[in-house]
Image (tube, rainbow, N blue to C red):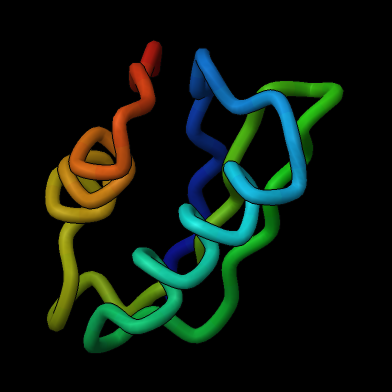
Length: 69
């Protein structure tokens, strides 16, 4: 399992956190997603053989947020 902390701009409320959590959390191979609104991060635990970090970042961007790193 991989664990990545992704810097994200534009998340400001519980709705934002829920949208990202649901979008990333339903991806194959993703076992855990945590959104830190204050820290502006998304932490994802995933099986790199099933879902890549780039795919996870893309899913966050699909929700309308900017991935910084």
